[in-house]
Amino acid sequence: MSNFEIRLETDGETEILSQLSAEAFGPGRFARSAYRVREGIPPVGRLSLVAWRDGQVVGGIRFTAIRIGEETDALLLGPLVVDPAEKGKGFGRALVEEGLARARNEGFTLVLLVGDMPYYGRFGFVPVRPGQITMPGPVDPARLLALELVPGALARARGEVKGYAR
Image (cartoon, helix red, strand yellow):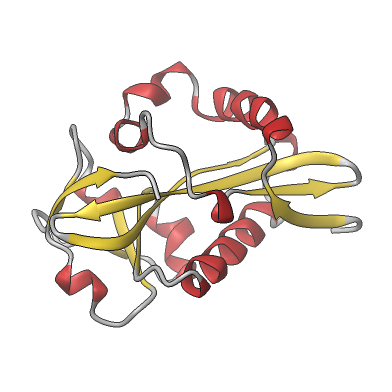
């Protein structure tokens, strides 16, 4: 990863990341439950990261502050996007690791996402017990994953997920 760096997202990178998301996830992405949670809610700026390599954006990650029932201090990870031409080179892994480290340092207790266990399990994500946490709209229960940044945070999280500005 020569000349690789991760830094905070700036307004000038928003359009590039939107294009990468459109390529990676297609137009149906707006109907997904995770997008419904994020709709109209700005991501946590201190956790919106962009990966650069050799002067070009190769990926990005965002986190949205969420409430799960009465519990606050949780995050929804996503989107995580990597330029399709750069997949498999470790940029996504680097973004997730950096984002989770920053989230922990910011005092968040739990990170939730809708994703693939084979990918996210290596970071410590585990499946959420069916019915414990609900998203707006249908979600495959096997894809609703959580990572405790503070022990016991997942056990306390019960109810519907709602995004909020923080």
